[in-house]
Image 1: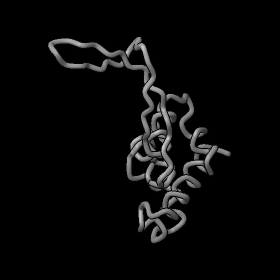
Image 2: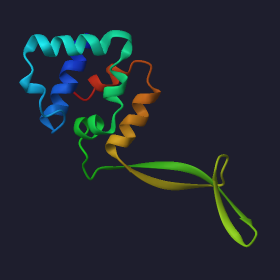
Image 3: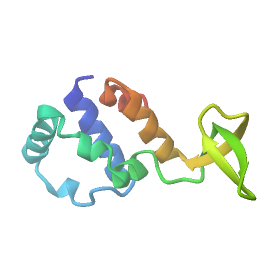
Image 4: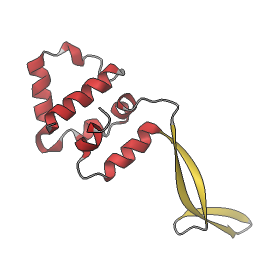
Amino acid sequence: MTDEQILRKAIEKAVENGYWSNWSTYHKYEQKEILKRNLTDEHYYSLIFSHAFAKAFWREDKTKWNIQARLSVHFKNLKWYLESAKGEFLCPIFIPAWQYHLQRMALEKERLKYLERFL
């Protein structure tokens, strides 16, 4: 798929799940112009990385992702401190699916190709 097709389908999926409720009121040529403007110079980043878009695209469901974070524990001044770094143990952290996917997408070179996997 082309970047324009991926972006169009991603927007349509998010719209189906409650995002951008007036998208369907635009004529097809207006939608195409909006997509073209967003694809120029990667302006679509502000769209695909918005929390509202991500919640609609991946749905704000009950799915949680278990991420193993490395934490080191220190006892100092009669208090325990946790530091993320070269830690001694793993601690599970649960985050909503949309947050997990935003993080994963940020690491990708081709962000639209990451979205394409979920269309």
